Image (cartoon, rainbow, N blue to C red; front, side, top):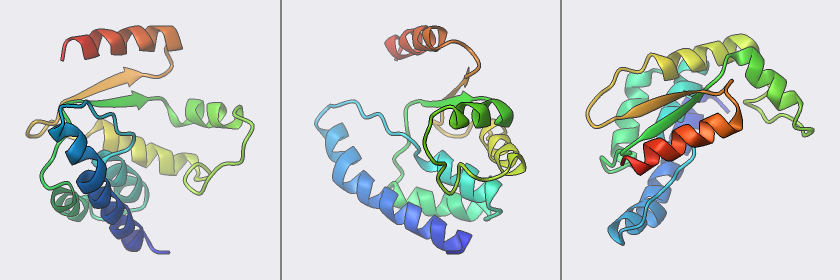
Length: 145
């Protein structure tokens, strides 16, 4: 499957998820926590796979009906540390996880160099910290929303 097709499939699934899960939950007053929203497609298929990020952004805008997260948490770790942690999990790597370090460096670069736009509020978390320290940081940030 080529990268453009991957983007179209991811965006179609995202639109379905927005319409059938996220939007109804928000409309009923619930909080929604979503793992890997629009920024992941931008980083993995754009940065990692070389697909035009402007095209991805336009597709995501349509797929999400303009819905944007109030907060995005970026758990950042150097590619080497992430690879070390993946190898310790004791399960086979998926298609993305088996990419080389250069792929993950490009993905990380897109994540970290995303300009702050519109209501996009991102908190970058140093994932080399302990789980306890990360949990405390998240609790403090969430309680301030």
